[in-house]
Length: 196
Ligand code: S3P
Image 1 (tube, helix red, strand yellow):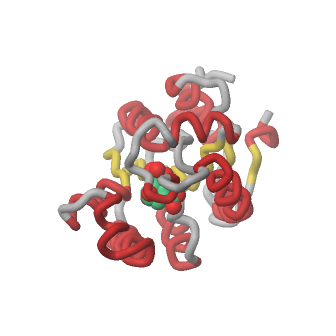
Image 2 (spheres, helix red, strand yellow; image 1 turned 90 degrees about the vertical axis):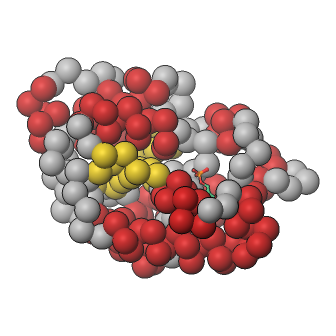
């Protein structure tokens, strides 16, 4: 499915786009391309956290634990309240707390980028910057974490986009095509298939 309708494109030009989804689904790379197409500013919540802390995510986890990282993540999301014309890529766990979910839904159109677990595993373990997967059996940890979060991604998103087997460019086109079709009411929870 590819995006060709310029009129539909205009329909999301003035919205913030929030990308949620598991580690390795491509939120940052896809978000950057999407922002370019929309003329939006691209932001990445992980980058905001690390820039303010002056430390990598791995260092923050080591010094402050996951709890410290989550506290910092929420602070950065709170600061973004009221922003406009942004595409925001969030960390995979940003949907864990109700306060974060409320902020994200208030901020804009929330899109869940998904892919099959094998794709997520391959992409998420390519770099060593994800402390939650630096464990003895990262594959089973990934599957357990993913399963525990699926309903949170689904419950937070206005739209789910499956990027399995798609290039980043194709995924951007798919997002634009489907996102253009939905109004952001704050309580939609649609699968891409609902818009075929
Ligand atoms: C996390 C995902 C990471 C980062 C941190 C925790 C998670 O972001 O925020 O390592 O809990 O899923 P990415 O999804 O960008 O890898």
